[in-house]
Amino acid sequence: MTDRGLLIVLSGPSGVGKGTVRKAVFDDPTTSFEYSISMTTRQAREGEVDGVDYYFRTKEQFEQAIADGKMLEYAQYVGNYYGTPLDYVEEILIAGKDVFLEIEVQGALQVRKAMPEGIFIFLTPPDLSELKNRIIGRGTESMDVVEERMSEARREIEMMNAYDYAVVNDIVDNAVQKIKGIVQTEHLKTERVIHKYEKMLEELE
Amino acid sequence: MTDRGLLIVLSGPSGVGKGTVRKAVFDDPTTSFEYSISMTTRQAREGEVDGVDYYFRTKEQFEQAIADGKMLEYAQYVGNYYGTPLDYVEEILIAGKDVFLEIEVQGALQVRKAMPEGIFIFLTPPDLSELKNRIIGRGTESMDVVEERMSEARREIEMMNAYDYAVVNDIVDNAVQKIKGIVQTEHLKTERVIHKYEKMLEELE
Image 1 (cartoon, each protein chain N blue to C red):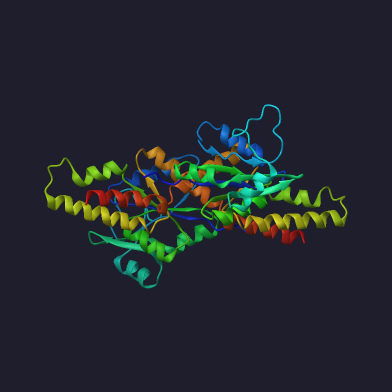
Image 2: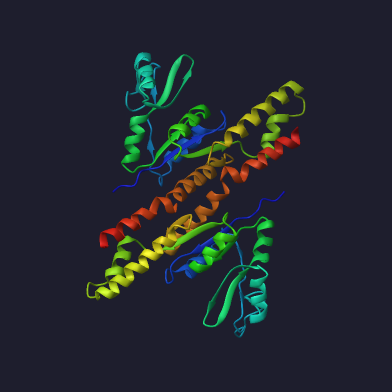
């Protein structure tokens, strides 16, 4: 029996550097995550290959997939759909491999509903003083701007509640090392390994 | 405000190598755990210092500590008491430092009751085939011996259920690296960091 793989979801506020961290995680020679290929309705750009870079689909096909419950998450940007097909992720997990998704916060909340057993990692800005700087700026911002940034930060922290882990993106290598630690540790959870021992005993009996 | 430290409890069946792994964890230059000094009623051996190697106490003092609820866990071996004083552990945790305890399984279960928020790590024998070998031996064991070992293994696996993580002690360095990963990851749990962000926002408001 192969153990089911883990679904790792990396998300966080826009501009925090999710894409850079995801790339560094995949480039790390000690990781072997499966990459989930997204589906989109946008036109393929030169050199992009269907089924490699994206699954390129028509708007009708994409909406049919949504209607059929075949999208793990999806969103619209500038008139196009982008999303993660459920079947492909499910296949990889059943094969015992870990899937790594890097997605926007709204998508991550959809995945949380569909696969609550996933491991949800929230990437946060460098540190708390950085957050303060982001909000207050150089002290020359109008009250409106500061108030707007406060609301933004409040929303982000609110979002964090839906995640299992918060990883600070101070230095990319540090963030990658922490993410690798999270995945390794999740695989060590007793609930994930005890059945192997139980099965072995059964076989001996 | 200082965050409360984590209580890390390493345990496992006798003979699995808990002491060796604990020593390697403390010798690792990247760890900085506080060591909990045990209390005992046995005589100090030459060179042993009270309050450094152990807290050496009389039987009456130890039993008074138990009666006063001042022992996090304790057990008796060959006529002497051994245990972990609660106050000292609590002090370190409040100071924001992580405490690392390496104790027998019965003690670990007592700690689980007193401090359920602790991180409980079960050290397991090298691997499943090893378990099989340990049970069946070289095929020349009597049914009684095999049956006794099966019961033993069953009890161990039963125990594992009370722990958060299972770490295989194949190579000591691997086990140490996994334990370090567990501690790092536990510190990244959203529930442990979100209040810092919330507090910061409150201060800005």
